[in-house]
Image (cartoon, rainbow, N blue to C red; front, side, top):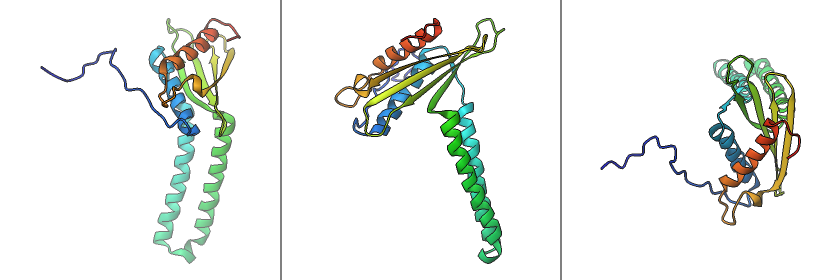
Length: 196
């Protein structure tokens, strides 16, 4: 008798447990729970272009740092001074661009999901989900935005809850509660309602 797991859709997953006093870990775990609902429970595919932009900026910065290191290795310090100054300046410039990108372009968005048009005639609709949680605070805000592929119009909805609404006293993430809240937001936007 084989003990191997098959491709069973009802396969049980182990619950996620976090240290409930670590705000960053809690926010990341809740974000992962929301991402799971948007990409696994709903028939949407995740779009990584927003995160790819950040990776390109970081990759360029690392490339500049590696070039400076290699140049200094083959042309020791007194000779490499102008190149090192240029590379350090370029690195800090790219870090400034990265800060602007994450502040004004990403805006806390951690998942972008594409909803394909069933007929394949209209452009895909885009779902963006962002979250906020202040340091030393228990308030977790989820905001969802739907950009309709057909009309180009966008609608937004948000919900503000305590993290205690999604985590039990042992620090276990209650995925069913996250799913319920995300589906409420999703349904309010997909039906055209502006309220929660």
